[in-house]
Image 1: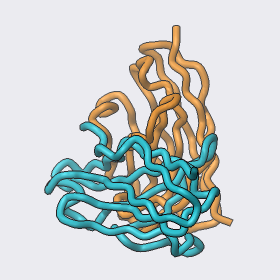
Image 2: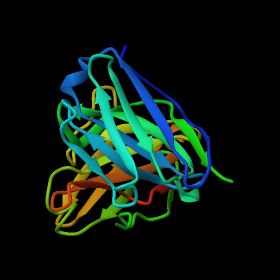
Image 3: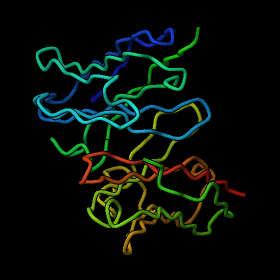
Amino acid sequence: EVQLLESGGGLGQPGGSLRLSCSASGFTFNNYAMTWVRQAPGKGLEWVSSVSGNGGSPYYADSVKGRFTISRDNSKNMVFLQLYSLRVDDTAIYYCAKAAFSHYYYYGMDVWGQGTTVTVSS
Amino acid sequence: QSALPQPASVSGSPGQSITISCPGTSSDVGDYNSVSWYQQHPGKAPKLIIYEVNNRPSGVSNRFSGSKSGNTASLTISGLQAEDEADYYCTSYTSSTTTLIFGGGTRVTVL
């Protein structure tokens, strides 16, 4: 069964940092781009970042560029999102998602994790 | 970058058909055939229901169909059922910035 399991969420201080992890199973991990999508409380979905299958090409939303870093460890079937310079408006559920078609993160995401909650507050 | 302006809500009676629009620009929706649609029930993760404008993943009901005309994509749900009550989001790629943009979401209510 194809599965994604996020972890690492919690309470962060404004200006602080957190590291989110997503563990994948049930598919050939390095063949697929991976994406993080977030959803603030009561709000819609927002694309945050994607990374190519080999990890060499990261992509970021303007709202997080320069503050978040996406990476992956294909030997461990994991993708990470390092959050720096946290802001209150980063508070959200963060979902990890698998590209539906190999390295093309923009042609749909067919498997999603259950999400991990990040709360930024002093 | 602002979200694609989907209607906030759409409603219909069981058995009816409804259509949700996803208006974009020539730089996103109108540029690539990269429009996808997601269904999200309360407290659940999103589910892919349409990819590449008009393709359904395996296991998704054929009551869901997608289309695109110019810079506007659309999702049609035919034979509306109670289980279709959920939030629906479109998304599109913007090649000039290599970013994805989601629509603001549409709440579908089955009357």
